[in-house]
Length: 312
Image (cartoon, helix red, strand yellow):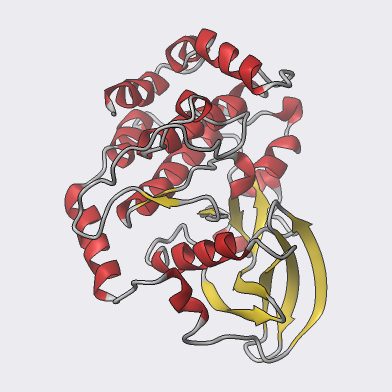
């Protein structure tokens, strides 16, 4: 989880650099999923015998024995996040606890996905989970500033091309790893990416908040049937048009949301930032499609958009 602690922007992702000449190759290399890698990662998940999302809250370590110096970091739609010192392991941790009754299903899902996602270097380390009264909590690795906060610290609220290129590669790897275990995130946005808390992890980007995630394939590897007229999932500013159409979301939608994130990092804002209604945002997204937005971006991003267009 994120903390207010952060590495100096000029010492991590936000350090100015020229666009690497092999950026296009790196971007394509990470976007084009390695099916062998995905199958192997999926096999390891299934071999763990994980069948029930409730299972994680009934087995293993269920509580941190002693914590102190608890400090509230923030809150979201279904949970509040605290920073605390774990006296047993002598380390700072993040504790996410339900903010109200009725959020259990999202917290259980988050814990389940977090545990499955542990093989990825872009996943916050899972430490413990359990119940505090009637509310579920998850203890995990404490992280540094989010991409959202880092961008706001920059002149013009934008990153350099070089910084955006490095973020793109890290973020695509993170999303690829999540897709490899059979889940789509469904809420890709700047505040759901954060850098490491410690200085030696400042260049690693972590993917957060899996409460809206959903399996897109069955255990046998087949894709789940497409649903129609499902509820809106995600954040309006970064949601794909598929989300606005209330259709089931897939891997393409996570990558589309990431494209909007990257555009905002370079331009400083999205064309629909002042739109208030979902319908108005959807109209502007139709008018300003990714290929059109690419006209104001470095040519390397055309490869990204071309790949998006080829996905189903």
